[in-house]
Length: 174
Image 1 (cartoon, helix red, strand yellow):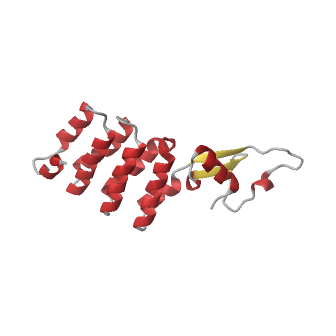
Image 2 (spheres, rainbow, N blue to C red; image 1 turned 90 degrees about the horizontal axis):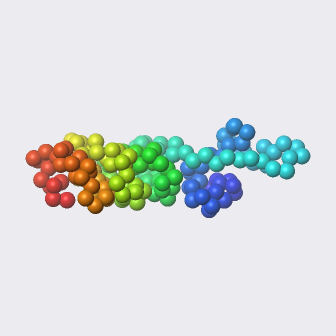
Image 3 (tube, rainbow, N blue to C red; image 1 turned 180 degrees about the vertical axis):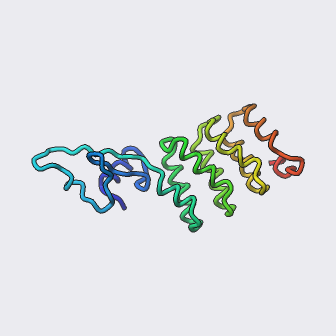
């Protein structure tokens, strides 16, 4: 769904409709408003600003909603790509500790697609999960670090090594 203008901006700028808000004269339009009604009488044009927001996607990722909804939210962040910025990478990284293994795996894949090699923000967002109590979360964090870190990235390797305990042999093998 969404307005024709939102569909156009999806097509032109590759911003998913869920991540768009339209602003006219400093006011965010709701989904039911007709943009033409915002025009002043006799005016030939209207300035509309498309604002990229992760609000709905982050709500879906943080809520105890269905697996399908969370996977769809992660896919939206992948579709948004670098336009989601640091906030997007942090939202994806937070999914590394989801109870659902499928969500954790999808988060690793999403980070690998969205974060540029060696991206400092992504590496910093993943690092705390290397110390998580759950070994599966730690393992996913190591996998994410491997996908994000550039070849020979000594900082990423050091971050992984310093946080692993002697009990993390399974994680060390991955």
